[in-house]
Length: 352
Ligand SMILES: Nc1ncnc2c1ncn2[C@@H]1O[C@H](COP(=O)(O)OS(=O)(=O)O)[C@@H](OP(=O)(O)O)[C@H]1O
Ligand SMILES: [Mg+2]
Ligand SMILES: [Mg+2]
Ligand SMILES: [Mg+2]
Image (cartoon, rainbow, N blue to C red):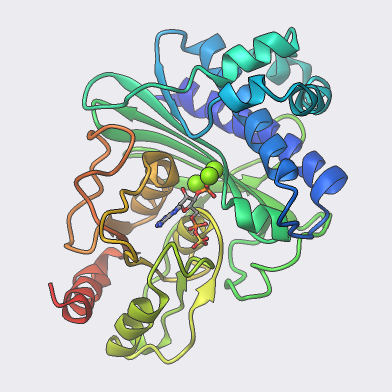
């Protein structure tokens, strides 16, 4: 099975949904985190989920979908639902053929609500299951930083296809991540990247476009001959990963530079393209179970780029356990050649 059609649909669907999130940002959020008004991110989340599920349903009607959002609250908020529909109904790729491949425009607001609710699969070890995070890094989206539109296809528990749109990452694979690349969203032509991978065939990046897919380039993790020079990244939210523990691991590895903090699966993408080296997500809360949509596509893209992705014990992420990574704790991603060293440092710091 080559999964070429699945990859194409995933890439186009992510590209189309990214058009919506950008439109929502420029119309509604404009880089200011408004604590009381959650609507920009809510509009982006629901709208992107509707557009992507429509594309999956049209092309692979028998597949299951595990998606982050569900429409019950939306059905009780007519004003919000209408506003989402207003923004979603006109979103289309410039290229007619690509647009038709994804199912064209959604027929109605009611159909949009029904489609949003088709992401309730329980997941599991059997069959074809798409994992969808319509906006990953919602906080980053609101502050005009990094966020990602993420879609992975899991077959019998194993991720086979991944596509991630990062509208605010630089197109150039060689720009090392910094607080700068994680910061302000602009409408620069040099920003917006679409990453994808199929198991066994490597990972690629290409500019996000409005129509036909741009030419892709293979990406790979960079070698780390001197661990002390490695660039490590972590999440922005102190509640999502233990920044103190992450720093202690880095120190034990001899890394002298401070971490680069980025929201979303842009972290996986950045190390996969050699713009950084190590991604640490050490758990804060013992009982938190990571969600499969937060990791499926990123896990495959990093591994296809020559990396290894494990939990804090050094075990591969197990996507066969349902909607969460119930068998894993935390995430550690690094080039294959240094993964054991990083895991040993994690075990020392966490006293495992
Ligand atoms: N306690 C806890 N621990 C770990 N992860 C959690 C936790 N709570 C939430 N989440 C999930 O974190 C997702 C965002 O991940 P990021 O890597 O962007 O986090 S960070 O804010 O940059 O640290 C975020 O995804 P989105 O909701 O799509 O933004 C959540 O699913
Ligand atoms: Mg998420
Ligand atoms: Mg999300
Ligand atoms: Mg969320």
